[in-house]
Image (tube, rainbow, N blue to C red; front, side):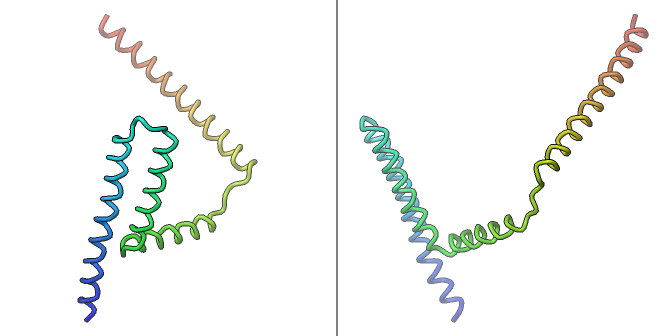
Length: 122
């Protein structure tokens, strides 16, 4: 029984995805066809079509899983402990100083190696 429900759901999902692709195609073709019209009207029409296409896509099983993923990601982002401004400045200064020290060491090593190679080559 469960496989029949999944199969019928996938059939409707296929139709929904076809509707989404048709809406996108209508937007692309319509934007080209109405190229002489105001850009504002074309952008508003494209935004409207994109919203409708997104709403249709969210009605599919993949769309619902994607919406769930976004909700879970938002919850996880709220759990992140963001650094304070002093911590951020201190970390940035450490990184910049480290990069400068390593770049000076590499420049020095490169200069010494090029001096030695120039001495051997002549």
